[in-house]
Image 1: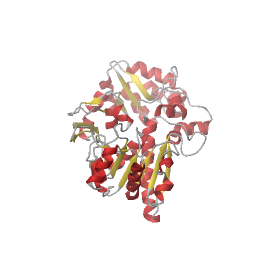
Image 2 (image 1 turned 45 degrees about the vertical axis):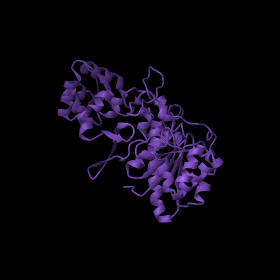
Image 3 (image 1 turned 90 degrees about the vertical axis):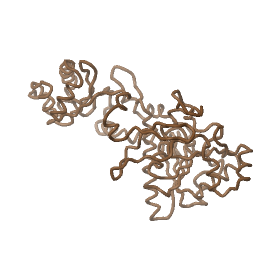
Image 4 (image 1 turned 180 degrees about the vertical axis):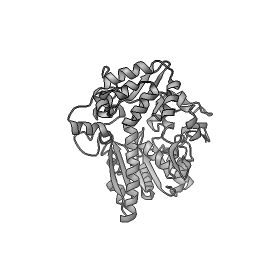
Length: 402
């Protein structure tokens, strides 16, 4: 879908790489610029490390968000490195970066400098707190953003302390906001012929997707509390222990509640005026949950799930990741895949969930070794063998470890 689109990726860690991996999955040509000999920090964020065929250890973390890209190991703190980035930006449709505001301006790689030579460039800046405001110069990592932007106050049980989500969701959501903003900016460029500077902050994105909990506070005025697995606006909608594990019950309306009561053998709950409506059930959540918990503890998870499925009651098991990747739906949808890497052999990947015309989307290139495509990218810029060799010799450009 994005074949012919050129992305220059100066981002590291997760939010920016997640954005550019999505664009690569959709067909864009993504050149990832990394520091020679070091690369993206996440190459070393392990264990676990991929057991590569050539001993070039790479962390699973890096592999999760960098497929579809070509790696150019380049030191852009040098004048020669800056000139190469400027030439790449002159040919690019999109540039993505996640440095502290003002950092790239020191090297002539800020939006104003690059757009002067390529006014069609869409320049996407991802940062912790945005390009302005009192916190603009603070670095931002996912866990601190989850805390400062409110998510940790909503996560965990009332009895325990605040808790972060088990995945770096603030980073991931910022990357997804960035990818959609880039696509919107590309559409706008078809009308205006001009690019734009996109400013995405992890903090802003986390506040934006507080969603119903944010509106609960703005409308109701009460600071939301932690409810564990329970939903603040719906009941019964939480995890319950069974005789051999746990299941997640997700009753979304009054009719489903009546069907649940019948399937669970709790007809008295359906007839009780205290539980007749969702608002009433939320008000009586503790009493209702205690009755349901006692009943569900009497049988095994799969027994309950079979009954609820037959009754059309939404419920599912609480799976660990071993169970997830052994799930028949994962196999049927092709969500676990293997890609062959020229240096590393088989690399596992989790597929992009988008299907277009019933076909899954996945970038054809596996995640790159550091500097794997340096020589290739330089050749595309028109540098001859002698010029490239000189850059390698001076350490401005790096290639893969031998």
